[in-house]
Image (cartoon, rainbow, N blue to C red; front, top):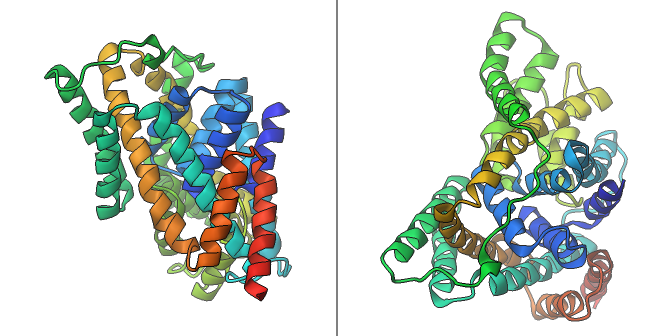
Length: 395
């Protein structure tokens, strides 16, 4: 219940997209509650950047599993996902509870995301880029990410940083740190080898088998499950990257209209939590059956199921790799690249979508002050930023 309570609070207050979510997670799980240390958190972020699917949700699931086993992973996902999913389903039923996408309060949520990501970058950089070679790697990773802003690009940049840092260490240009605090310890992962292998088998079996089953036994429910499972399995980068893939699955077959798709996308911008909960809205409005609550549950479960299977299958292997001497060296480069990825995301899309005027910049500075120096809880800063932006909009 502890994991569910913390995750639900995050699900109610984590605005700003997947990169901002990682900032909220860092503030809650690392800084405030100390469930993880900086090294382990960075390693989990790196793992989830390697995997397809919603990276921030996968990090949350992984934290829940490490904290309280498989049930903890499920509770972490439920708490973080259900608030926005329920609001979007209500919106699908015609409840006009959300303002327009240009409302002043919504802009305040975008501004606070700048402060959240800036705080996460600052905190992680202090621990993960303590020397000039790793600072340089982080900056190069940020530059490369801005030049190649795709999910595939992120994966390639992370891999290249790991190999480059390993090469620098082997050639003596960069000496490995002598302090033992840089050596990651073996995490306690409550997942057996058999369960991990079973998760990989089930993931591959569903990915390859569902299209065949859909062809042999045509069913609307099966077609919906197959489409959303495939999207959740194949999209790298998460967030807005998923939108064109989903649109290609639901609009051409006539399940929903393009107008319905666009309206739901606008509503999804106004709610906290993962953007993948957009699937709940689509499942609720699609025609023919399944739709309503049944369709919402089917689409939501299908798009997130790959994330569960990949995390359950990947965590034990990642845990064994991260304590190997050679892989530890690579991880130092990988973690520096993760800082660079967050730094790039701080500019685009977080900064470019939020800071348009001096008032926005001033509000962002106040948000950062409250978070980083006054140690105010993120949910309170979210509320204050929304109120502040509303006031600025009326001046």
